[in-house]
Length: 472
Image 1 (cartoon, rainbow, N blue to C red):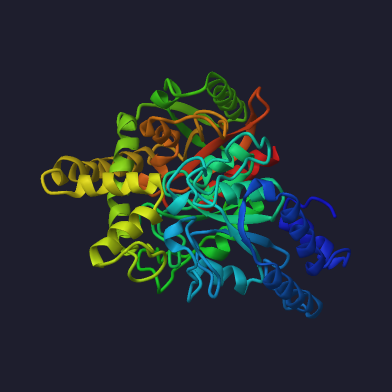
Image 2: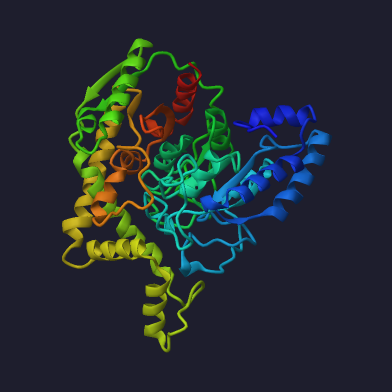
């Protein structure tokens, strides 16, 4: 069976009856079996997928199938699916089965998507490598000695390897866009509040956002439109009408900004810098205005992000205590030891590190010095970003300072690992939409992503514009 890159190709073959959904699912199941070494899937829903494929084939026969018929999709292991296990790749949720489905899952199923399994990730979505999983690291299908990025590494790896047509991830500080860059696929983070977080296991509630991975902008746009919109289960979701990408006006020539100090950063691989500069020249040659701007708060983005997200994580993860559900230590003998041992044994090192940091910045005597100041700085970032979009349509940057790094690369200093997010956290702090596009290749043969961000709730304009870039 051919290697499908977008849904329209599948639906064309379904219409001509050269394939069926059942055959399509069998093809993906065979590929998953053949690529177990990637460790992308934590669980494959083979029986469910086959049963749904049979139902959808019947719907296709009667002309009643939804717009996602033929879409075989995997979901990150922090998005719940009724009567299926979910663990956030953590021992602390070992054996837990969800009693309900996330809003995004319900909306995908309503349009006849086929969910084929749950995908590995960094524990509780904390990490930039997908090495922080209780179930082992995920490998990059382009080079299995390299990481796929994180935290949604399983979601990116599965799409890049063709184990499913698309997948869902979550993006708290770049966890969709950075792995998309490392694996050569498209990864999209919508505006904060555009897609419901109901059913997403929380890491940092004011940053987390669900978004899709795919091998075409068209599929990204379609999945976004299906999932976005108001939800009575999540009062942080915008009530704004979801604009159709295809009905958005022709992009025309854009005014595009890039941060001068970001391009001059010492963290940037020289080839990534050169590829970005070449891309800027290409945009100019196509008639777009591309200008360097100063963003004086750039050096504060990563510290602000980690102060605020770890604070929220320490609060959100307090519920995993060995009492209510999930893992409970066999060595516990009273209430205090149940709390201490269950959390000590159940959480991995990166999660513990972030809980401790978050608890510290929220503690008496340090709250104002760290958390309070970080919140004020976040407000300044939002204001500066909104002011920037009065003069420019888009912000451009490389997605990551380098290509995928080695799976066995030592990282003794956690702060160095946190700098992985230097180009991606801005979108999460400001709550704006951002997409990584696989538009360049390093001399080492690995892909490197180019990132575009737009003003809040301007997803349709952003996706319409990047479609023209891809098709040129």
